[in-house]
Image (cartoon, rainbow, N blue to C red; front, side, top):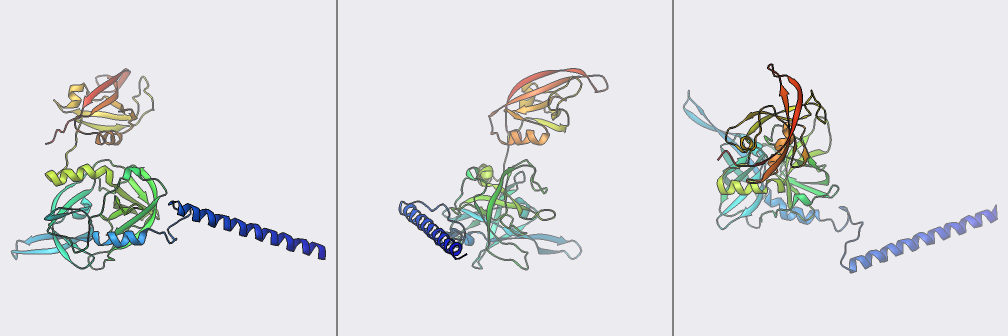
Length: 378
């Protein structure tokens, strides 16, 4: 038994020596890595290299609370009243010599008449609504003069470069007009990219969103989603609370950059169109003689539009657009929204034979059509 205890002590001491040796080796490797100007691979949010405090100090003042008021007139008393309608957040993203620009969600401002920004230092600034895009749920507001002292615009990043799992930081002003938690900072990760079909009636067009588990609450709408560099990569717009926990969604900044410029330049956003209305039809993946495949079926064709010139007809079923499978009207809208004015679309279309009652009588023709998108509604 004594011999066994002695062996146990020896093995314990040997194991401890090996662990110490390994820890020293890791420490030496970390020092060498940092000396070479590289970050240690195990740096995390809870380390001394946490970037969030510096980002918060710089960006929090640039995310004011956006207060929205509505004017009403009482025909009986003949008195005009002004009352609070909504509140949210906004991102200060640009300044010129005599003005500044704020970005927010359209759903925050859509019912408003009077808009003000309440900055972190208590300064209140009157705002002008320049324009909006209900398709992507964004709006741009302008103020005359300077932002409060020391407040700088948030630099815009590239949301197309985001990776699932990387750091995500949100800054906003959750709460209501009566109680707001100004400058709230939360952090998490990018949980998903290009999420489709996420909508609470705040998008009239199809856009893909960024999913994050960083906490987003009412009042955060229009605030900032930031990457580890403190760059604006998204606008928080929706938080699922009924069923899920930790699921929030943001508008990718790269998706709306061009729309923002259009609003500043012209006050509105216009998109190229094909010139058709379509409906989704269910069906097999591949066409059958008596059953059209799943796709976007043409309901009407506007005369003189790109679709009309390309030869699209009513009841045609569009199944491919620029090499992407189309199984619904939403898929087709998404494909069109990714194109600019003057760009071409390559469509795969199935045209079936119909009897007098409008039923498929059997047989179809596969067509490959090319059309050039135009801005029809100027």
